[in-house]
Image (cartoon, rainbow, N blue to C red):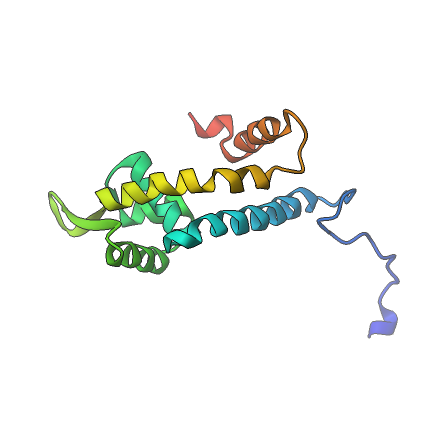
Length: 161
């Protein structure tokens, strides 16, 4: 049947290379940039014995205080089992604790510990030179412009309503 199929002219393939006009190009570039940023951030976190998935939860706990696990799932883009493993790791390391939620015996809120907050702050100090390396290829004013553009993509105005 392949011989009966109409001949198609090859079309451009989606890539993440400069100049790609595919509708997937921006997403692919963002994915590549994410991989690069995650590698740099992972390098900053490694000496502290945590990974980006742990740090994402610590960020939520610092920003929002005690948080139930289902909300951590939504906030970090993880799944229920993944969050359980991350919170187990954080508890083992003394960086977070689970506490009962008043009025619902089944639900536990995760709370950052003083040790977790200390680590959170130390990571930011240690990451400063790596953060600069992340944008080393950009010119004057471009890191700020990139941050502005990515913020607008990640947090569209209609999400604030």
